[in-house]
Amino acid sequence: MDTLRVPGYIKTVYIALLIIIIVFFMIMAKGLLVPLLIAGYIAMLLTSTCNMLERRKIPRSISAFIVLSLFLIFILGIFALIYIQVRVFAADLGDELSTKLNSFIIQANAWCLEAFGFDLGMRNGFEVSKAVEIVQPENTSTTSLIFSTISTLSDIILLPVFIFFLLIYRDHLAVFITKVFRKENNTMLLDKMKSLRQIVHRYIVGASKVMFILAIVNTGVLFALGIEHAIFFGVLAGMLNIIPYLGPSLGAILPFLFALITKDSLFYPIAVLVAFTFIQLLEGTFLTPKITGGTVNLNALVTFIGLLIGGAIWGIAGMILIIPTIAILKKLFELSPDTQPYAYLFGEEDSNWFKRRKRRSEIPTTEDEA
Image (cartoon, rainbow, N blue to C red; front, side):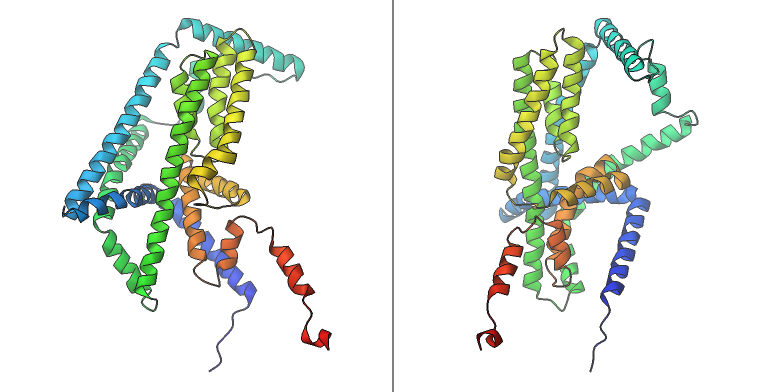
């Protein structure tokens, strides 16, 4: 019996429609999908520890509770450190620093007006009331603010609940996938799912190590330059490194501006900028490849476009989640011959492809030999 072959352009239209439907669903279900996806990645990270406890004859529910509790204590400790540093930083923002900031803004406004004829609208310095009007529109009511706060709190509460249930029912979900793909080999499917979990695990652990090392190095550099609040700026720059390309730039801007305002010499802000640029070069060429290796293996173009799409759909959370998500999609595309071209599109460039093609074309055929 002859099988019906679908033309290539019809497949392309189907894939485009599927992408549109998925993006629309991601936008509409943002409130549920973001905490669920974050919980899924954290559950993948904690699965190996749960397995270790279960091998010691500890029940799965208790193992999940112990691992989740330790993880929450660790995260709360990090947030407590950040809160203390923010409190110290806010306490030091006294009248003297505010005066310097306003003087710097007035000078910058006068320079822009004189050089480019462009008024920044801050001839009298930085006005807090105008900033509040920009951040909070006039039509924002107290009721909507309360509902927004409740929604944020519900997301925070949902996150550990999702993690706990995903840890408990991880085998149940694996069996469900094997039943969906019942024509495939169950052992092969389980191995593929395990490899996907390991990819996410290695990516998160590697990214955390890189963030920790960068936080220490950035803090040491700022201490050496005599920049105040070096711990706050160094840790913040290290944490922002989780956002590829954009995060390192944002992490360098704050200490640069702070040094520009508080120091009398231009040497310090320039030194901060040069030092952070050098640190990022080392991170990109040595630190990240050494620690994470080829875990993600995405090309820069796809990564940058993914960041734009993730930020447009889900904001900052989307920019953080999009990299491991694309890595998983790339791994899934490699499973089928029909989708392997898309996996190649996501991956690094194969510079030897044209050379191999040229060598094959130079091999004489049987007719040429005759």
